[in-house]
Amino acid sequence: MTDKLKSLLPENLNEPKSHAELMRHKSLTQKAFPHVRMRRLRRTDALRDMVRENSLSVNDLIYPLFVEEELDTPAPINSMPGVMRETEKSLEAKMKEVAKSGLKSVMLFGVSHHKDHTGSDSMNPNGLMARMIDRAKQAAPEVMVIADACFCEYTDHGHCGPINTMGDVDNDRTIENIAMQAVTAAEAGADMIAPSGMMDGQISAIRHALDVTGFTHIPIMAYAAKFASVFYGPFRDAAGCSLGQNDNVPTHRKSYQMDPANGREAIRDALLDEEEGADILMVKPGMPYLDVLSQLRQKSDLPLAAYQVSGEYAMIRFAAEAGALDYKEAMMESLTCFKRAGADLILTYSALDTAHWLENS
Ligand SMILES: [Zn+2]
Image (cartoon, rainbow, N blue to C red; front, side):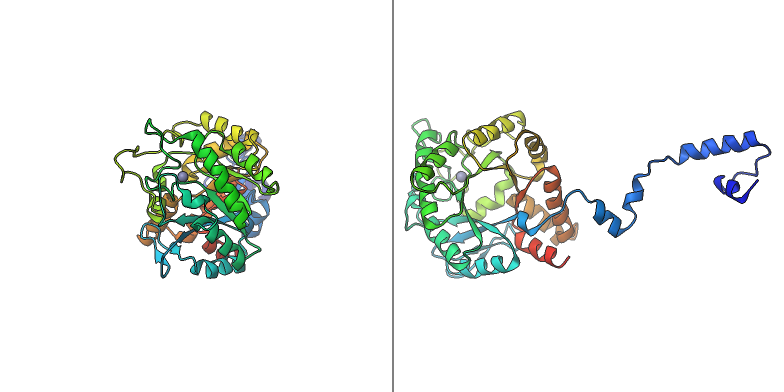
């Protein structure tokens, strides 16, 4: 027997006495070692880089920022380590930092001190929403400023529109108002409008209003499947729009945001937004809803966005602070998995950190 043939045999077998015995050993060996070895392409860093199916780029990231009026200095948000409420003035430096990092876009959220029943400050050309958009564009004209279009940060009851006589958010009054809010944002310089209230018909109302006022070029990113999620908790603290402070209104948003149990309904709702003229569809929250994102990827050719919400961010940050996870590794894995599930764009509070990691990788 040649050395080569001997080498085919497991070491612990004695030398075979006949060809038949050799063949029996060989067939055992072949069964144990198949032709297809998935590990062949996992052997080295270079090889893994070559066959990677999805990768994260700074172009994919949208950075949400909180801006509070009448604030003297930027204030940390305790439930979101590393995230600040910016002042209107400090927003300028933040926008310059964003531009330098290579990030392409921000989404602005106002923390209002002028709240009322309808959230009228957000429709005022001199209100916080208009002022912060204008400031952001002046500071970094090349960065896309996306206006989150909703009322919950501007209403005294914290809901996403005025309350009707039945004690529920009035859909049709809200979409009339949101059309005005969107035009106010566009006039202030917003590059994109992102309605987040989950009102029926809001996309077509905004599209019509933008078109008749000369803003045909402004795209709409629809919060197309937004679930009534507990993972928004830290955001509600950050933006000062928690429910439950007013006895006469519901203490939840389940009559307009979606039931977390419903996947088919999410696809229907998102495709309606596409029909109404949305340019980008978003799924929110992110990680618990990757199945919805993946299914929507099969059903729509529009760019898709996923929102890694405040609770997801907080879970990773607090786990890292407790020593249970590595912040960078956990964040990069999470964001890459959004890409794998079908997202073209990801909103994340880690955008600035991630931009730095990508630059240095
Ligand atoms: Zn809202």
